[in-house]
Length: 338
Image 1: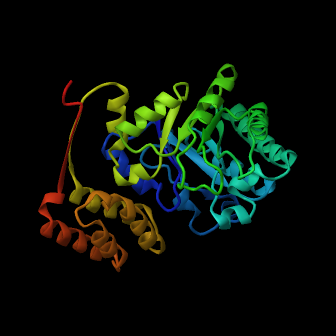
Image 2: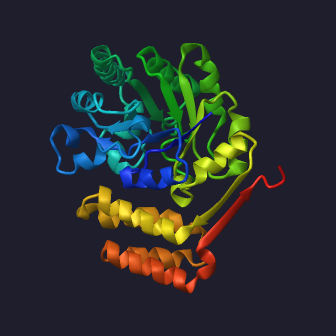
Image 3: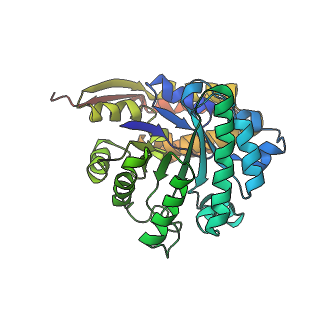
């Protein structure tokens, strides 16, 4: 079963991948959403989105956009790059994304319009595969639909995706409005996995897996899933993939985490891989999650929020751990009874 890092806006960039890799990494990294229109029109920051460091062979390009023409052109730009393939975002339910016609809005458009977009993106990938001899996978990340979804409409939609050559479906089994208010309906992941078992289509479970207990519950609910995708838990615990791999293998996981050094390493990677204009938002986004297990999480978050530069942030990190020495080292001893 694969363990996969989810696409997260302002977070799953090259610098973040370096931190996760430091702790053993995962099987695949989905990039943060790449806006097709910005990429096609040569936006000034696109080179930061298309950096494949530090593991080019594990990268999946996640593409979002509102119209077929831009999606196809963007796919033609991304497909020749290193990586596994392209993922079409049909799951983002943020109002600004949906209202623009992107993200989960593709599930609500006339089905033939969505079919055309998927078919043309697939054709781009097939052309690149024919030219290079390297297969590029087409995948889709999606939700259940809107509040009025029915099983018939949902499975008709996924049948269409599979018929057009989509080889992976990653399901966040909530509707577009549920956000995180209700538990995810993992049973729909299992139903998808069983439905497409003979089609050579992998189905990935996404949603509410953040530790050993939730992992075991997810696997029990969807035993035929090909993998688990982790989102916010990867920012809170960048070592989570190695920890959960041990759970899947019924093995012991022992590790001492230097949380101060990890924070400083992240700031280094942020300066290396992100433009100065992105520094503050990327820093705030990571530390919003990373410090949740600290004794004074809100205080630490505020310190990072008020940082004026990477050097200022480094000083605040060192000051915090100078005050809260017990927060510096985190010892994980999972499966000690083995």
